[in-house]
Image (cartoon, rainbow, N blue to C red):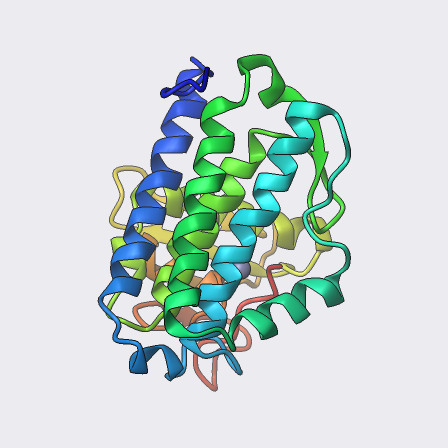
Length: 251
Ligand code: ZN
């Protein structure tokens, strides 16, 4: 008997699943608004058409479904055979007919959702490995999917902006990105200030004395931090005479 509701009762996980499902629906809407001919057009990602973005999102769902199968069965099934295999798969997917490309997105999203829904509550804690080699509990796949569908919906360049992304998702994205910088030590002298919230949020290198300060509303700051341009942020301090510096690499 296949369950029709989530097996987990963890409220935090259920809230996360909601954001992932909302993001998937949002991506679907932005994709469905595009004509077949529009799919050939450029995305916001250098070298990628909208076809590449759509193929990537489809194969990402399949890869995450493999991690959930791993968590459910204990049989190791990696996201991708190799980074090269991942890239080849996207290049191939981008050549599919429009109907096949749309089916890839739809079917893979449904498949992942069924895998999530049917995963027994305790199996969400089982450890799996990401494409970057991080060992994480299966519940991390929910966040991994959430950030992909929301950001790449913007990358489709069909009118979606970072302001469409829910605040909890934006906040976690900024923590993720600045956390990755701190781990790598690439945020030296860089301070991020988010304005327009009840309590001012500060990220980055808070200990430096002569800081490069990036300031702006949450959506604009996250857009900049994710490497998607500097619209809506202001920069001051060292290294800003030529304008807003590019954010350190994230992924
Ligand atoms: Zn991606």
